[in-house]
Length: 278
Image (tube, rainbow, N blue to C red; front, side):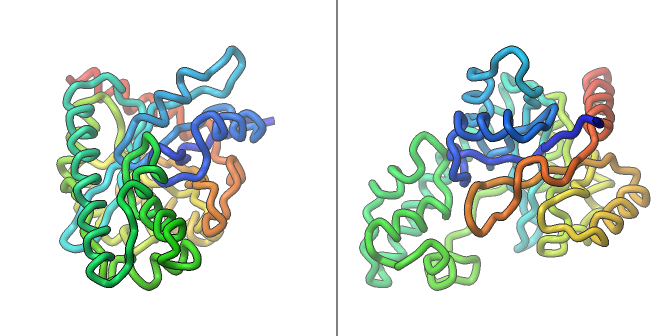
């Protein structure tokens, strides 16, 4: 049987529903040979999973999903195979953590102005040790009785067009790619067809983007082939993963897309090349 991988997984350390321990248990049962924990702007989930690994477990790849912005649009870049102890990378992650907490407080203040009482302590409880994000605020809103369910919180209040929305602190794509390369890693455009992010590939490729996620739970067979053609056009490596969050609205199953190990081998070679140029 051909070995497969899943390079896009989330834990409670960002906006996933499964703890690092629970995620690792699911990975073990999935049959994948290698995986990456790619929490948003956080390495906490990666580090916790790394500490739980046992002999015979699937290979864990350093990963993180970095938030970037082009104009008023979000771009998510998956970084892989970097040095998790890299000083510059860790300083940026800590800066993100502090800015995320400030953003969370501002959103809660806006909700209060709208007549919704959501104690910030509930947001912190939902986030646990993770980086505060809107999913945690949505969970806190449900716990406080401000809304009936998670989706209602986003739909009515905290979506990008909602009355309590506050923009997330983000890097430019150039900063994200440069940071990844400085840490010895490779940068991959996540889910290119969400919000038509593929339209920015010419610019991203010029900035040094290494790859594109062609397998994603939202991709049809046609999307996969379209992404493969874009990769050929812009000389990008291939990647893929389930984008598993463990939420009902995220229906991906770990390892479902049968992403080949050859993708990871090529990413590893690129990472070695980047380190060799340092």
